[in-house]
Image (tube, rainbow, N blue to C red; front, top):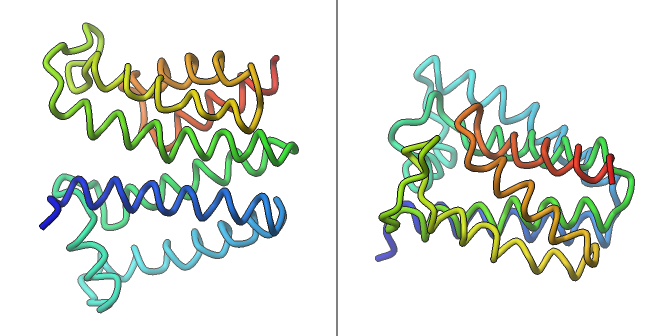
Length: 184
């Protein structure tokens, strides 16, 4: 059986790839509407869960994918949806949105998968490793297929953002990406 963190990262990737398909084939508005609906329903479910009310399918997802140290049920999923919503709201170019989602899905998952086995801790964030950051950067480079040479700078900026221990990386990575893409 696949360990829980690997299942979580594969789910992370799948949701990201589905989001990319939605934005490319159905458009930015459809993605924003879907995310808004997901966040509203998710917030209601989080409220039920914090009150101790069982929600069977949600309980299964929580048991299968949620980290043990999550601040509240659905923590990672909530911030992931917010992060994708930030990209879809502030960027108008569908290919830029797709590139940000790709980096959030693939780069972030790669950093966790590789970084957990890494040995070289980052000096400014002992919970992250150099190996994880390198995996994030390298696995983010295929964003080139969405935005061309800008992907190199975007991969560098988001790699740095992901390593900073300020807020959840599902939010800081899209914020850094949006700022970078709006400035260049």
